[in-house]
Length: 376
Image (cartoon, rainbow, N blue to C red; front, top):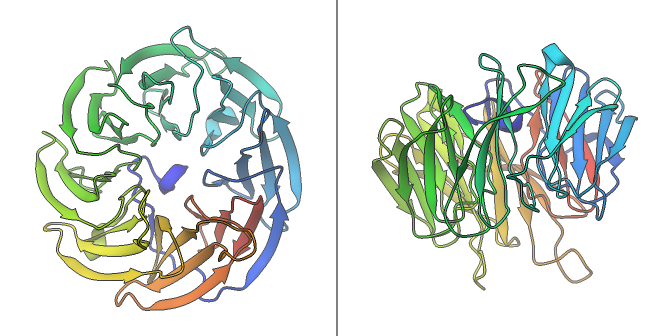
């Protein structure tokens, strides 16, 4: 599941890799823009190849390819696995939602509603097992947020659709907590919507587009989200009121990670369209936004989507290019308590999406040159 849970906290108590040693590497059909999704001993990864993207399954022990499926458009989001139905669901840039048999990669259905425009679906879906509703956003210039019923797993049905304002749509993944869906949009607003009815409960306006996928504290009280106005926000989950904001020098365009036990939230930033380096990781106090520590990666243009595993935190970097003369991407590990860097792994391409964490602390991540890595 994207960001490990419906609340997107991206936090595991199990210790992650202590060194940058890879167990295996694999090659995918194209660039990886989404996070891998784990299901027991299988890893699902979509690739951003045009005009037809590829969804593939890999054996977590060896990295061997189990199956591949070609969609009608590039795949830039993280799929969601629904175990009771052996179902894998994802969107592609042909404006369609796909349902595959997760064990075989066989297409069970391909669904396109009349409300769907031609869109790039970077929004990673989230599934609510209790209601059998799937939530996701579209980047179709009108920016809809959708709820689709999978009560009949082979017959998707639109439950509701909610349009956002002007802009390029809804690039982030919705977070689910307390019967509501929270997601940001390119109109600069954060939306909180009743999951069953689609009624908007509140919106909070920022001064920049919201690429960041929100994360919610485990008690369901606080929404954490970044904006391209440079602010990291903590919002009241019930009202949308700003509890605190922390201004960074760059874009807060990645998804935060929340460590409730430590009382901390982690935000990563990029330099956006600027020329100064703002690739930084901030550890902030959950209740006040006070800085506990920060670190800047001087060689990078951005850090993205931190994940917490025990005593460490991990994030990937992107750079101005991966041609000769430019630095490659790096996967970086920090000590959670001090902010000291533990290790760095150089990869051949940008790392613009979060790693997936396994039950034993193993880490999986893909880069934008189509490399897939496993570390333990």
